[in-house]
Figure 1 (cartoon, rainbow, N blue to C red):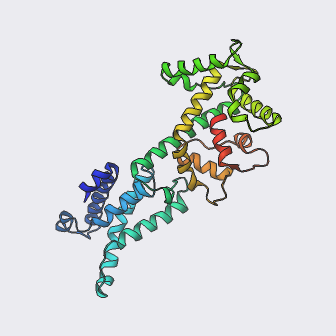
Figure 2 (cartoon, rainbow, N blue to C red):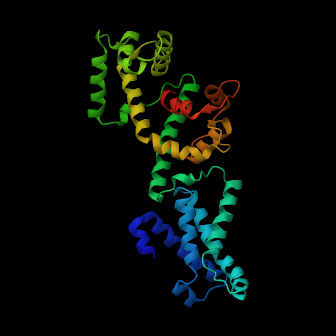
Figure 3 (cartoon, helix red, strand yellow):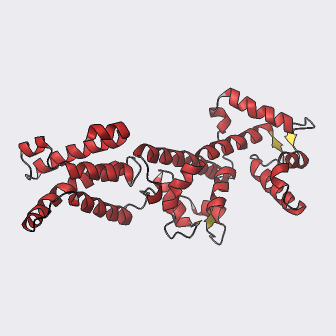
Length: 312
């Protein structure tokens, strides 16, 4: 069975092998299985399914979900022994019932005791590999956001390292060339007029007041050193942020959906704290919460949160 799983998903096969090993050791330690039963694999079927489901299907494969998968696989062994006799008396097969019960019990436990372990949205379940990619995209973007927020809320710390310092020189040169094309007067900074020209397509349907408000907002967030000017380094930094966010936008939103526990389409303070904990980021400090949600702690729409990831 694991060989066929390996062809479809190496991660699932690895989790299944871990589940089978856990089942064998659990049965021997509890004295429930003999060596012959362990070798035959008769009591590893449900453990394999539970390990795959908990470690890579309902949760992304991470250092938090793998122990849950091991615990779920171990739980199937005593459940098999408890259920086998009564089911046999009424003429029913054991089948995958221990897997279903063990997985359900672990999901309930995780929801109550480990809220930082974010499940995969049911409508978006694919392979463990894809779930892992979503987690890594969310972790990278949220770590960048958390780092920038810390520097912004801490006077005297500076803006922190730029994305450009980690990118290939050719890519940075490409965006610098775009900046030079937009900088019509070769002043080394973009003016409101030049920025309006760059955004002409996006602003065509908006009133002059709306365009002015949009430009002021864009300039305010792109001006990283708060000197009132948008220079080449700030322009390149914002373009690189936008590029990184656009590349992982769909995976990020898919990862975020289960965090919205009340399904109201907004992200409140508690949900954002849970989201940060899920990727191992530091919790928000009170002054940082005010910076994000305002004094009234107003929840953010998903669009506003994505803007924060880009413009904070």
